[in-house]
Length: 514
Image 1: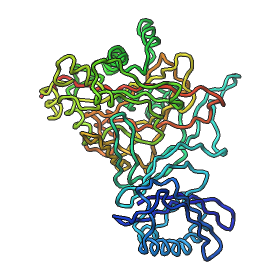
Image 2 (image 1 turned 180 degrees about the horizontal axis):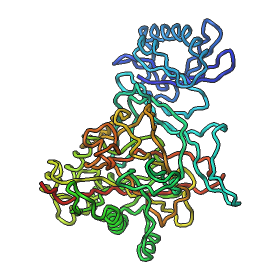
Image 3 (image 1 turned 90 degrees about the vertical axis):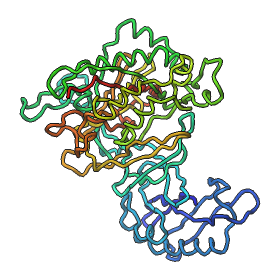
Image 4 (image 1 turned 60 degrees about the vertical axis):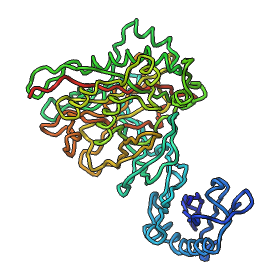
């Protein structure tokens, strides 16, 4: 089973990209190495030419065609010959040939050549697979500036294309290796959408019952994210000297700083009774280094002389920025990840060497974790995101977040990540159909002295408690913030590549008063 990109041109010379899926037998006949070299078909209507290059497909997926395969291909070609000219006449991106999907039990999607491209493959059930790339907004979408008489322009918002999944998407999955790299993506139907990225440094407009036009800062507890820029000189001097590609330096030094930032951010929070509720523990447990130019960052390295091959294989690798709209935990995976942290570390747990060296069975106390899972303690996961380029602010591919109050449960789709020894889950996100659609924010020109805190999950949040949305009366606490990297149209040509680190922390509060 494999998907093959083909470029189609209709009579108006409008380009479309068509993904055709061809099924091979379970045990295809063998043939000399090289597979099919290609296929060119002039459709009977003479309006469309389909050229398909098979050379990019793994040889294990494509072998010489049997008579059944040839018949299937001919049927597919005849069907497309009839359906494609009709579909092309709509001249719209992301038009889905539902009749083709029903007839061949595959997904055939036509998208305008102006939309982001994807790399494609497929699973054993014939479902399309693709990791999206980030696209740029059309020239008709301008950068908006704050009205001012000053010569200096302040950005109010920029346009961006973000990779949502279409509403007809059901469940998505992939496999992730010990180094953090993902295999083919299964089951996603992408819906690239133009949105406005608001300048979060300007704050958010207050509720309607406040003075019109007044703003306030975005906060972790209400909006799901917030900015911190209060590093001490001592802490800043320490992180400037850090090699963020050295796993042990990050774990031994930087994790402590992230824990302190998270604890200060939450501080003491009001409990349900109106009293002050104290945090019991904050523990950093995982991290990713990302860059748009991974070669400039270098390779992740470990100084542990006694590291086993499995531990070395589990070292994280420098990743590309994640240019798709997602949230990091689900209602199932958040409590499951919390439980995992109360058990012996798994092969791809970055803290495994340190915990084993300290003869510790687990990162978290199993009794405290069970109390949190039983609802007796609040728990949360928080991501500490930082620019690690001391000389340059982030201009290329910044991170943007959605105000948690504008997120809705019915726009979430489960994404399963199959590790070697566990299954994780994220949410991918559909564009909102509700009034007050997802509102996006980003912090322009983030420096190394600043850290962006993103809430990944909070058991006190409205969505975590089964409510359809955060921010409704009685459920004002955010559950998480949806987020994505995006191509910044205000980024000057030749700007330095983005280099960032994100550290995941778990937070558990003291027991709730019953």
